[in-house]
Length: 217
View 1 (cartoon, one colour):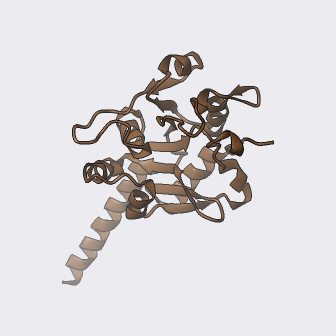
View 2 (spheres, rainbow, N blue to C red):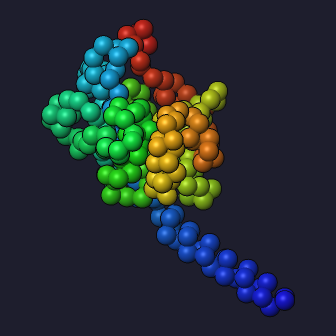
């Protein structure tokens, strides 16, 4: 009995070590950055990502937070030509039968999991142009240190649900959630128990510009 227990424990440790090497390894994670521009910007009245912010398109400012990304993708369902002209590799929301078009940011996240060349994906909406320059490195390091498959920004008050690092292992979970008719990003994230990454000292960097009223003075 003791021998079997020891053998089982050693096998478990071997599997855990293999999973560590495959998913985290000993170097910085290989991450695909994804900027979510799939919404219709109804409150702003125009495509937010293309609006000028501090001399550049807002989406170009957001991209600066993805320093170190192996790949950078942009999810958009309109103005693909304009975004491509800015140098972005774009993709539309995928079609999944019973999931209606424009089903919200979770559909963009699911589509990105199909598009990304890497197993790890770091997300941001297109309307947070002041992301910290170390956004990717901090999130990736936290995932490695905590052996976490999902990490979400915590701004000192609440989680920023679209500033999240995810492993592709959650693709099936997300697919099933959307097929169930549910659409709430916060609810799905809660179901996978992401590790919070404390950005409370940089909370303003994650402020969304949803309307002209939110525009910095």
